[in-house]
Image 1 (cartoon, rainbow, N blue to C red):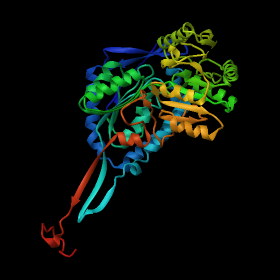
Image 2 (cartoon, rainbow, N blue to C red; image 1 turned 135 degrees about the vertical axis):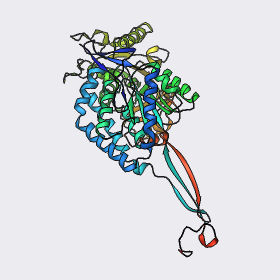
Image 3 (cartoon, rainbow, N blue to C red; image 1 turned 60 degrees about the vertical axis):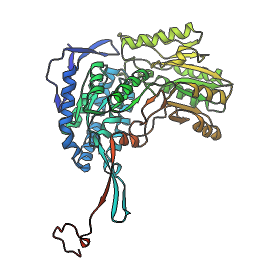
Length: 496
């Protein structure tokens, strides 16, 4: 018996009958755990209409009242984080410790958004000209759409939704159809926290729902995270329909290891950053650039650590890496292992050999050595537990390799030389940089985003740029006549 996951529209579960549905799997067993309703054009219209009706009242709600809702939501989320982590693991497959970490980072963003009264202050210039004052105010856009990916079903929606709400917008969230339950859980918590009906709506589905949001004239902005081809499509389609768009795309994150680095630290980092969440994250390290003469020793250390990784059901506390999200995605990632072999890379650890009882979508941690930039395992975003080692002769060669890549999401360098680290952070053409930190995801009061083909639009996610994205500025120039110089007398004494 499987359950049903439906939309959340106008403050309650949608009560209609879906013309189309999709299967939601338990990745650890391969079994169908639920069916999710797919939105048609009528449901898109219903969700957007609910958000549009709710917007005027929410826009006029005081900053203090908006913040109180966000504070209440933060407390509910923290109190029920274990329940949400189990939901994430059951549909995505990541181990519960990874799910808990995702929720902890999401809470950071909610806490930042709670500061809306401070973050939405404008500027004021008295007597810009004689008797003339000029000031700026930040106002919400209206209805905004959020399209989020499967790999972080709680964190990525909470990159955008809290900031959008804090700024006075109403939201239609379209989560991934692969693991949709987390978004409904979040919407229910917001309702419990006092968010009025229609201010946050959750719409499930596929391209029909996405295109409905991209093309709907009442939707003023779109926030998206996903692969680069889809990010480009979302950006081009959304902007063609007059929307503000931030579309965060794919990645091929390099970790440069210099000869003076602590190789034990670097090996630990490569394994945790390469295989956490089964490599299904846009900030995963997928390429280790070993600057000679350390490659042989580093590969040996990484290999030794990989052999100790426990692959299994994410609900098992002993598991360190879970399954991939679907059979189709598992097969796609597996095809890259076969391509790497055919193209001449050295397969050091073969994840195809992993065996886990009970079915499921399994592929173990995989390590290639002697990878070159012409190979598909290097060029493409694999989005799975496949780590490639590229050998470089010098720092300059390593830097050139990183900068020549089409993606510019995240990168890291491991070194004990402060001069080299400072030079790298200055010269590398990537949006987020780690110095002896393998996954440099910014904390909630900075902003997340890459360069080049990893970002379409000019605004990063959450933090200060998130507040900027979800508001538009208005400048007011005012002058009030001096009653002593004539004009309308409103009953005040002339010398008041």
